[in-house]
Length: 124
Image (cartoon, helix red, strand yellow):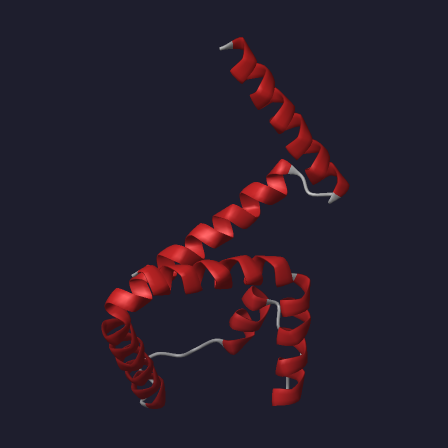
C-alpha cells in the first residue's frame, strides 16, 4: 500500500509540474472540464430532442415576431444591447466584428464545449 501511495504521489507531482509548465492551474482545468460537460450534455440533448428543440424555437420566434408586430409586446433593444454588451452596433459588419472578437477572447472555452458537443452528439 505504501508503494502505491508513493507511485501515486510521484505521478501527481509530475502532473502538477507539467501543468505548471503549461501555465495551467487547477481552476482552469475545472473551468474547461465544466465547458466540456455542458457541451456533452447539449450534444446528447440535441441528438435526442433536436426536432422538438428546433420546432419550439421556431414557434417561439414566430410568436414573438407576431406579438411585436401587433404591438402586444415591445422589445427594448437598448436593454438587450446593454445586457449583451453589443453597444453601438449599426451594421451587420459591426456585429460580425464584435462576435469575432468575443470568439477570440473565449476560444478555449468554445473549443472545449464544441468538443464536448461533438462527443455527446456521437455517443447519443
